[in-house]
Length: 145
Image 1 (cartoon, rainbow, N blue to C red):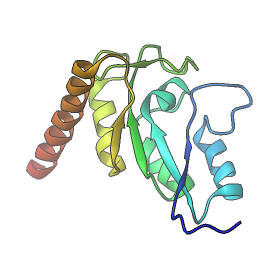
Image 2 (cartoon, rainbow, N blue to C red):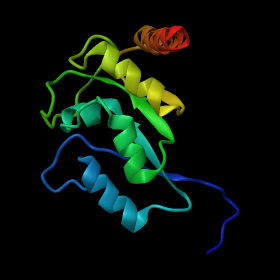
Image 3 (cartoon, helix red, strand yellow):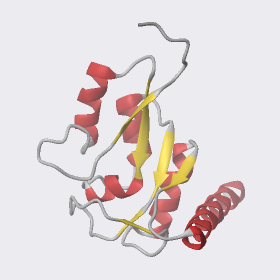
């Protein structure tokens, strides 16, 4: 079967599971060695990284080292503590991920951002504003540094 569709299938990191193949960056690296390449991209979910036990500090660098790319960031705070292995998204700035660390990961990824947070339209508007505010703030600080 041939297709004229030009599409990329995204692999996303996961929050938990003892046999999950995309929870830890070193596991993602091994997966990427097997399936990465043309037509395959990577989606970084911030809640999944936090809940999966990946420190936010240096996360983007580690992911890029494993995959060579980040095609999308799903920006989510987490209702649960670090390394809880629980995939429960929270609205931006209302969860347990330190806000500066969360904002820095989103900015450093340099990829399109989607919010996948709970709530209604007003909650999502607030989450998008939170992301924009943190990206702007980090950009302003980088310009002064």
